[in-house]
Image 1 (cartoon, one colour):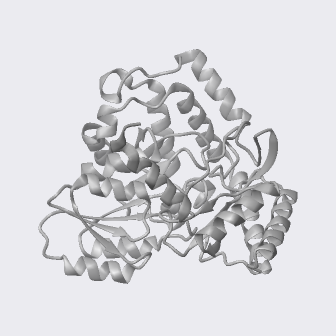
Image 2 (cartoon, helix red, strand yellow):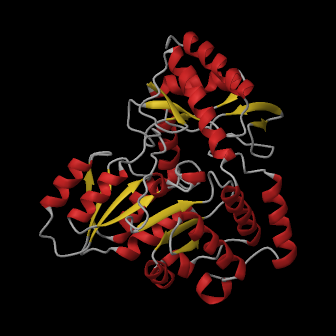
Length: 393
């Protein structure tokens, strides 16, 4: 490495010194409630595999069947030669599932935000963004060139103030919020946010990455949860969490989706989703349309684990969903907590700055519909032991 690149070594060392360096574990088995790491089994408590679909046989069989029928890759971007009939099939199923007029399929949830935001607003416009919005929203806002106005987290009144302060602005206005905030597990006050957006003539967009498969009837998301169909202009979703595969999408009016097909840069300049991914996603959507059993099991597991951890004395923040943050505060202590849990057979990583604000480091515990009550009790006992050992309880 040349001398001019020495800053890389220095920066990595700084991360280690401040307790911000992330040790990345490698999983050697299918994603599930238990995973193999370095030849040993660990209870998986940090995956976004909410419904346990990552290795579900029905998804695997559909992927294999689609490979047999259509091959593996699409071979091009959607606008040249990469749109296959199966992409349209999935888009139609997603639109029906979400109760929207149409959907467009993208490569990931992150990419979906990068597709939608810069296509809707530019440097002449304003974006009103929740202070705790996901990095993909932040990056999409920056790419747009629009002026970004941050409003206090989940605070419709502050949004009202910010919109009123900019009521004379002549350009477009776009309000953006996460549906479920992934680090704290709280739910955006979407009805009030919609009211404020309508009051001030602003478009409103929600990124429902952690609401898909979790909130609403059979996991149809936050818009369905609050009965706001037709009130939210842009719905962004991901297929890599509850759906268990990979990919993202945007749902909304037929006019919105037609516009994005022409203007969204990831649709124009990046290859379409692969065949097996599309097949597995179709199977996941079909399963959720048929039954809400997995969604109900997820919530049952989430309520049980949260209650047990709270009874031990852990701070689980303001979570309203199965996402259960165990807030430690200090970055180094959180790293030690995660390391000790791993030594006791639990895979639950520490989350620290810059993912969360300094002083709010935590173990973000993610339950799945595939966890058994025995799995959860195993976790509770280990959390209690490590918490007492580190003087947290």
